[in-house]
Length: 193
Image (cartoon, rainbow, N blue to C red; front, side, top):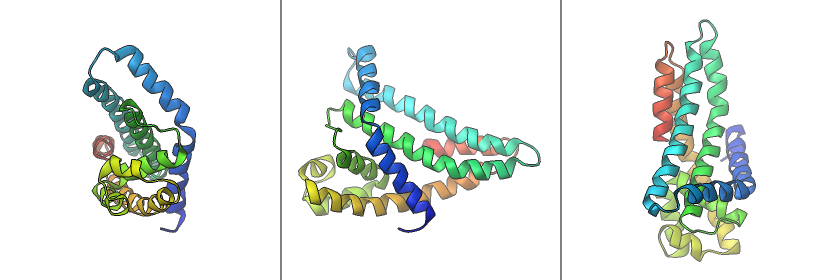
């Protein structure tokens, strides 16, 4: 993919993949310190709730700007543009925190990038991994090394960009609706993303 939006998407993914290692470790350590006695599934639900609240608040805030008389729609348009990149960051943090919680090594930047792109791409990403590694899902990701990982990240990147663009385009229009409707629909849209 080419264009301004594609460049911004890949810059956001690269930023998230390169800067989040220590933050992820600290967050997961915090979860384990406070909830280490709970089963892994319950710890994952805590992570799920936390990041769902972040995404929901982001969408509601962007949609809520449309409520301002006279300039609300314009403010919402500007905020929705930047908020799409914030969603990528939230998604990346959630993905890496979940992977780390489940014991996956997320120290390598290319592995972090692959995890982020894999989860954004959804089932299409799983198909790419299976085709390249001969194994489904995370097992396939673990089987790839070096050049294979770079090649796979390139393919996953294209799929992830298209998938997220599709989701965010519909969500952006919902956030522009006035009278508080945009805030409600924006929150709901981000919960689904």
